[in-house]
Length: 400
Image 1: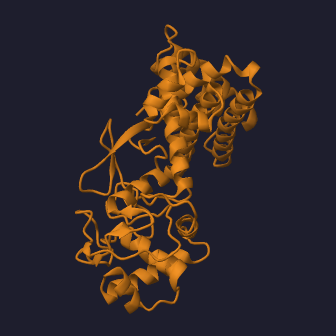
Image 2: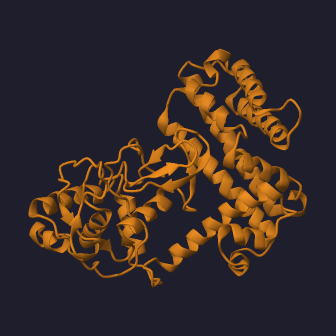
Image 3: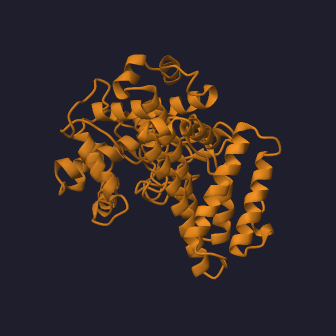
């Protein structure tokens, strides 16, 4: 994710496009009420505004919403980091809202929040169609002609065009998004269902990686068969063999998937707070294998370590993943020291290495069930060490 979405709990979001397919302007459908989200703010576009029912390269409103969800939050279509739980969770679609809710705590995520369409009562398909008209049709299209294409009023079309022109401007937070829409919508390999072949391939890989992570963590690589992963992913074994040559390659892919989601969670933390102490406290929480994907990742690390000597690719990937954690901690220590909040007793790079080494060792013990290594005890030890290394009061890092 490359932009801030401060309004994750704002149901007034518009929609963010991803893959599409036809190289021609999307055909119109019969008008529908734009109050797709019954709680949407209008943001200047009234909820009585009408618009097209579908953007042909992607599909209807529900399909466009799901596409946004997978593009921005959950590549496997199911799992993402819950901002409330602060761990990876499974989510489900919320009825009659443009939202997905955490299965565990109910926190809702609106994929359309934080985009140039936020606050609009228009449907996602209408925005997609409008963007496509400006990018691949006529960028100078008159508002009245655009209104006819979108089945909206002249006033609404004028506002849509102005908003999209801002979004298309160089340096805009949405420029990359719209360029991706242009690229994917005009690409070859359109499926009968309106999803590009390369997009289907990407989603299939993500689904397989997520399923493999769950199965490997639950059974262990030795007891896991390709057919088990296929069953969990809802695909045939042949599909998995098409993407991966061996079970070890699937194991590596699963470990990468878990680590990518943890990295995403760390990135989200940086966007949510710039306070070094609070960031350190919450980073410690993420470094502990409490449950869900975070715990699965540590189990996979353990299983992978047993194989690295025979598989150089596994060794290189494990080293790269560890270095990402070190880099994150080092940057955190440097920023805290520069702000006068931390008083490190050693160079930031060295403290980062110490933190990751201790975190890995204690977390591995906890993940495999060592006596006395419950999650709470691991956290206490990490907090004590961090406070000592950085001159921070331990109570400032207490769990909340």
